[in-house]
Image (cartoon, rainbow, N blue to C red; front, top):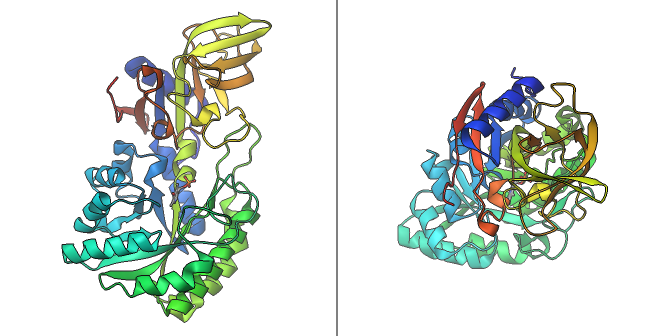
Length: 417
Ligand SMILES: *Cc1c(COP(=O)(O)O)cnc(C)c1O
């Protein structure tokens, strides 16, 4: 069993080496931690579920390549992600494609290359895909994304239960699904739901999965469908802020296991594969964002450390990626107080941009920071560079580094300035 944490002293050595060798700002992704998290998922939930990785959470090419022989499936959300997955050596048959505004060019590429499943989000898309499949001489397997009419409280982001661009609203399914089923060049092989995410509440997650099972059972019965695949867009959250509690997968398995067993026992589901689709849960806690203090300003009673990477390189940590109130991520000074000469002080931490929203931390207690110091922000393995306005103010783009068994590998995706 791999350790789910890296010894803090060794970690700081690796982060320092990455910063010194490759420059800052930099993301370091520890594959050993991804592997440990995957093992934990399989140990607790593998009885029921295969695992699919949502590429949009971290499309780093080296990471996708590392995952190829370890994970079951990839879920992509664009034609660009299809290219990334294929370049990383993934067989298109193991890839599903979600997204509410798929366009003709990317649907054509996906169908032509032998995509595993198209996840249909509308009748428009179904009709377009049907025509493209006919042109390609293929029968394209599809899943239908359903938007349930409720999402329990306790999700940081919600994609259903109210007006939403995603999927087919469950109340419209009876009218729309038979029309999709009648399209001759598509074959409905299952259903998909992703209605909420970033939940740290086991009860909310289990309740949501119960809603999924209800919708799946009802929809399969109405369509007289024996599904090959049902995708549960997992919604598993990760701790971002000091005091957040990590999910206990054993508790989730214990709470939802009996319901999953009953669900599976339905004769209609005898040949069905259940899939958990997730992003941040797998990779978020495996990543650190490393930035160097360029300047320190003492300003009206506050000590402000101004760093070389801010919201341009890490929008999420600045609190501007779908967070209502900015809260600090967990941050540490690399090297801590190694010489015993740095009493803890409150710091505001900002990035290099000329805007007041470029703030990575407020009132953070850290060993006194000086020019040249490195800090690490935790839980940055998901929605990092990919979800940041990298070109804003034209600073150097962040480096990306894979850390595997103590070895660093430059895995920077985009190096242009
Ligand atoms: C974004 C996304 C995911 C992954 O969400 P996480 O919060 O990173 O787990 C899964 N499925 C779909 C369809 C998505 O759009």
